[in-house]
View 1 (cartoon, protein in one colour):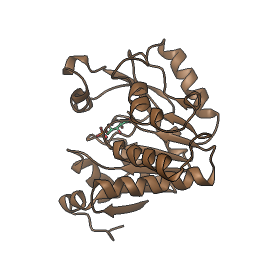
View 2 (cartoon, protein in one colour):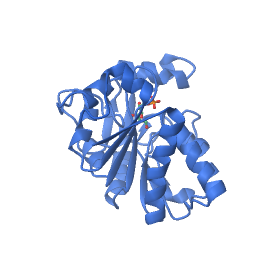
View 3 (tube, rainbow, N blue to C red):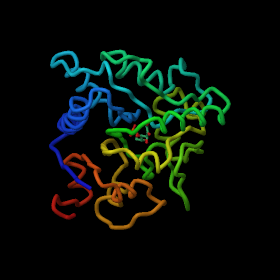
View 4 (cartoon, protein in one colour):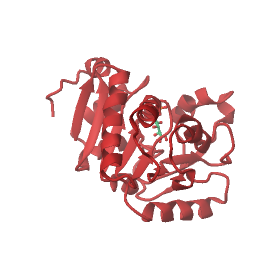
Length: 247
Ligand code: F6R
């Protein structure tokens, strides 16, 4: 696991964009694994800028997203499909037919079968990940066990609370989500974890300052990946007492 401590959020976004750009330039038809939420927003902004100003070409790139809320149709304003269209896809030269966000509005079994089939269709060059305060990646919530494959997850209270900022009130946040499983995340050629936002200290500590791999903190599985990059800001590194050469 490669850990890069950078000056601030802007630097984090640029470093993340470098990694994605390298993959797209090397293999223009590669598949990218994408995340929603606040952490990757600046990374998407930087990729949009590079597409517009520097000719970074997404016309042959394919994407698959980590998750989607159960019960929200793609056109729902808070769906992850809407998020991805607005924050990224509609602003770059990607063919929208090559982008996949799982369907939260269909019978779940049917949606899961489709999601798994898409994941099986090829490999992901770079999987972008954010970190939940409870240590989740995708929506793989902590517990005694984790799922290897795409499944429906009941969201933890802390996740519902954190995500309520995108909704009018807490009651509107869906309680369940479709998510890639841990095995599908770990199968990506490269993982890129962006640690950003409030309340991530404990999860970051578990990942960066301990050696345990535990389903109680799903993010700790990143340590088992052969090409995982973790990007965090100096400010967070100092708060959790991480020194760059610890591991
Ligand atoms: C989003 C996802 C989640 C988020 C995580 C952090 O697709 O899979 O794991 O990455 O909840 O969210 P933010 O970045 O909003 O703090």
